[in-house]
Amino acid sequence: MPYRRLPNTDDARIRSLKTALLQAQLIGIHNLAFSLVNIQNAKVLLAAMERSQNNYKMCLKEQVEANKNYQNLIKQSKLYISHFVQVLNLSIIRGEIKLEHKTLYGLEIGSNSVPDLNTDVAILEWGEKLMRGETDRICKGGSPVYNPTIAKVRVHYEMFKNAHYNQKMYQQNTSRHLKSLVELRSKVDEIILIIWNEIEENFKNEDPKNKINKCKEYGIIYYYKKGER
Image 1: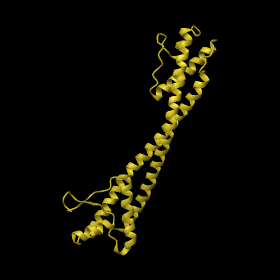
Image 2 (image 1 turned 90 degrees about the horizontal axis):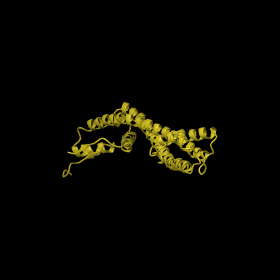
Image 3 (image 1 turned 60 degrees about the horizontal axis):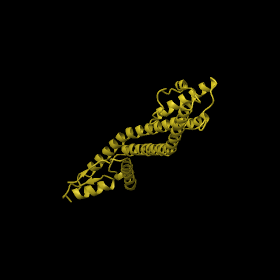
């Protein structure tokens, strides 16, 4: 005997509800294989499912598109921060900037290495440190670092910073809509199960082949075990 299986994707869930409702419309209320109450329930959940799916897809698309620009801003910000540190270290080696002034930037006096910038948090942290350190050093009478200037670093840093928080918002919106969609799935699965049970009950006195064919018209999906056909 074939066995049925509930849809396991959102598109399949929507398709199942649409098929059942379309068949109900074609048959008419006097010959329905499932209840009027569940027709209304199915309509409500179908509209909610389509709306929730569209909202999730739209947010995910916006997040993915924004992420392309975001990744470029990460690279640019890292480039300017690391370049600034390298130029600063060279200026210290040439004696143009005092060694002890490295502490103004949060840099170790005994190291000429560039800080680890492999995380967004590190970029945010070191961008702030360098801007604050350069401002403090200039206020103490020091000459600005050039190529790049801290102003150039700031431009790329601020662009990255804004994109970083925007990306967080995109992620939160996508997660919120995904959560709503996941919560809705169980309700949709429940109404599909109820409708399918009602349909099969309605055709229980038909011979097996006719029963399956009539149930299929309402969107019930049947599977056969290997060698059963």
